[in-house]
Image (tube, rainbow, N blue to C red; front, side):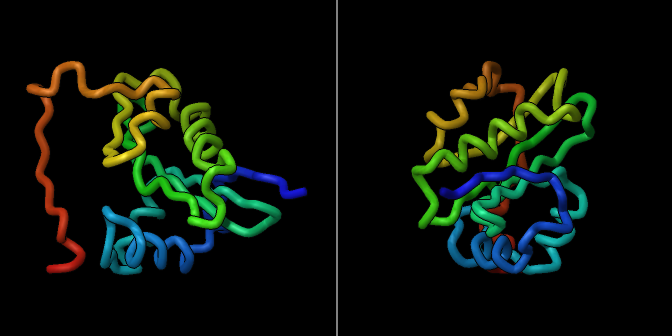
Length: 142
């Protein structure tokens, strides 16, 4: 029987696996340099998902731990999908003590709206108030 464990211990992260997935297989961070990922990990609250000690998923939250958070880079390795790992990752992030009482918690997703809706995420109630600078190919062209 496999046991799922979610941890915020950055020392336990398999950075090589995370980098390989994000830079080669994700739709949002293709081409991300390892140094960029390491800087993102260093400055984020990270969640690793482990099945019997092997990392199979990842999520990170960029936050000031007071008013705002942004959930990013959520993924589960293909072979482990459909086993509740993504739900456990998001639940752990939403339950983390440093992420309670925030005014705004945001994310962007192309295809996992149903997953995030379980945790209270909705389309922006006031989209006209939100703006962004978006460079989708920054890692490819940078």
